[in-house]
Image 1 (cartoon, helix red, strand yellow):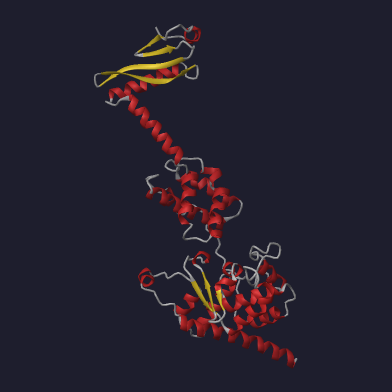
Image 2 (cartoon, rainbow, N blue to C red):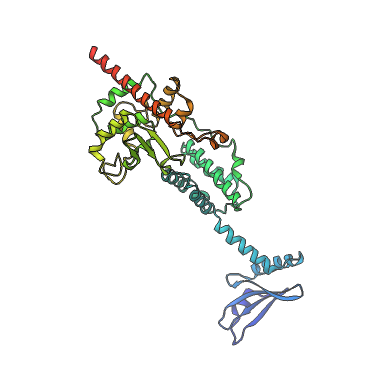
Amino acid sequence: MLLSDVQIRNAKPSSKPYKLADGGGLYVLVKPDGAKYWRLKYRFAGKEKLLALGVYPLVRAPAARTARDEAKRRLADGHDPSHARREDKLAAQISAANTFEIVAREWVEQQRNRWTPNHAGRVLDSLVADAFPEIGFRSIAEITAPELLAALRKIEARGALEVASRVNQRFGAIFRYAVATGRCERNPVADLRGALKAPKREHRAALSAADLPDYLQKLETYDGQLQTKLALKLLALTFVRTGELRGAKWSEFDLDIGEWRIPAERMKMRAPHIVPLSRQALGVLEQLKPITVDQEYLFPNQHNPTACMSENTMLYALYRMGYHSRATGHGFRATASTILNEQGWRADAIERQLAHAEKNKVRAAYHRSEYLADRRKMMQAWADYLDTLASSVKKTSTKE
């Protein structure tokens, strides 16, 4: 006779443990303290063994019998239910330790030696905002392509197609890392090919050669903060990335030999970069010295001198000069690259000055030359070219 719930509930404790048989080796063990445990007695490899199936009333009779029947099926297949239980428990622990969020954060940490701190922060922030709430708690081995697509569709729904594309790229990198480290067997991102809306690619606004004379005149008469004006001048003369300029420290400059050496940790490609300084660039630094030479940064933050200039300071200055949607700080790199290539300067020197990564892997492996001599000549010629443009504007204004 199968045990009824009333029989189990009304079973009183005794001075010694006793059993209430249910059938098929299943019974309830009643302890002296009144606790009631489901147990299954079975034989495997000639030995009598016990399997714990839960505590009553958290586990009631129907659930205990289902667990008994599953154990019997495993016995019939030649497997010890106790070993299978341990394997299931271990698998659950591994799954809990390998959620998407745990693996993603580990992946970010693995990339930090290749990324700038700002970039690493942006990547993690995007995952915290757009991935972890949707799939962060899921075991990475169990996540499917439709789940990823659902998370990306939410980003698309707010019109952030570029963000969705970047998050999808990060999904791909995280799953490749998970496969490599044995957390999952395949990368489901491959199944999303063609499923996302393609973002409209827009190049950063950049000035043309014809725009430069007017820009240089407006920069010369800019009436905002002097250090912002000098930052824009130095940006035009060196065409580094805006983050590299904003974070520039006096300790990176050797004014005697005319070099700015940017350490690897501040570069996008995580390699040190030398910027030859023209006479004009050195002149900007001489103007800047009385303002900030006693501080760490060339361009300290106006509100917090221990930090560098904010990323919007130069952009807002460009807006104030009338270049909203017409120019960005990053755009000066494209302007300089276009003009210098048109002027016939060596492409390798231009690319090295822009600190671009060598796309040809074989070429990169043997690329030891910094083209420094060529770049010194080129940067001085570039500064002289800007001076010529600025002078032409002044002469025209005088004639008028």
